[in-house]
Length: 501
Figure (tube, rainbow, N blue to C red):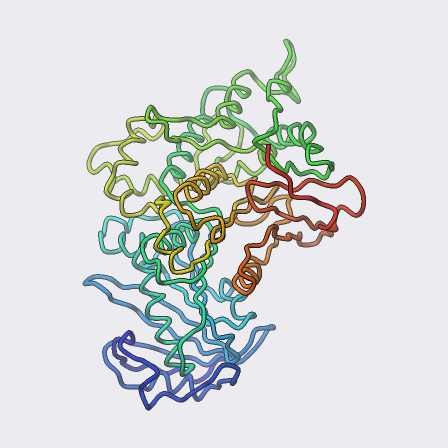
């Protein structure tokens, strides 16, 4: 049961330090209580409206002080934030990212951090919409900037100071973790605000609007005459690809560990004359080849990122596979259609015939310049000792792992510190951020803690699967896991990390 809800008016907390004599001292390891939570909300220091609630431990979670506020760093900005400060603090703060076109202030997102003792920092991203694909609020330039880069930074800056006031001392380490849009937010932090975090964990980042243009072009490909797919047909394609390439890693387990080395061709499923069941039309075969190969613009950039062999059954999430040829994308181009006013202005866009010229307009737009987190120069972050962990599911039907592969190569090429401070992991069989047939349950935060303590990035992450005995190692890129040929396949010691072909 919640208790002790208090609201008051506070000063700009950035000006507060542990030198203030009215702050109750709390050295690391000393448990806090509801009294400190109430005290935090009754301090008199200025303008920031702050509410606190002491939440007793329940459902396995520790007791914690929940702090809510609205930040107004610039005129018109209303950034909602939630801070959850556990009674048994580990001395560190953890920032959490959002998803799609939303922030994330849910308790579920804070759970792992709270269980490990982190003071958890969260934000709504600067707007109150609850529709993950409804981003019409971007017409407000302040909200657009808040979501693009400002909300996470202000959440972090203020959250560190609130934690300091609550615990009576500064934090030891600041860690960030986010997937999808949260991954983009994490890259933005490392690129734009390199002093905010000591360690950044980034999953499947939607870091450029090429993800959105890919969604539009993919849906366009599905919608070509006789190129539409039903879900059973996509499953048939996946089964054929897996059957052809599953054993390339030394074990037939239903997973393709290295999809881009899989040479299976969809023409193997093309209908013979007179066939119409359990096979593919020539147009479907062409569509698959287009989706596997991707599409590039004249400048060499990806208009549509390639999709992976072995993950086809998940494609219907982003492209309605009903066999009708009217495969409306439920994500509205990953939200690109909602950006029409800020990218194309009053110019109409024929989304069914989205073109390379339209793509270039997106990439050259002012919104892309503000929103994208594509800069591989992380020298300022690395020079401070920052650690960046990047991961991506091989079966991701949204942002392609090719997008992360490209960023990983660019980071390694541009930063001399990368070998010791940047590590990347591809997860076979994982969908977007989670799910799929692969071993998708991974303790990224625990792995980062080990990295920070040992000084060495993990050479592999261990993944498990809910309701399954599946256990697999996920090797640091560019290596890939190969089964040794003997012993329990669910024992990671029977796998070796080998160079990726």
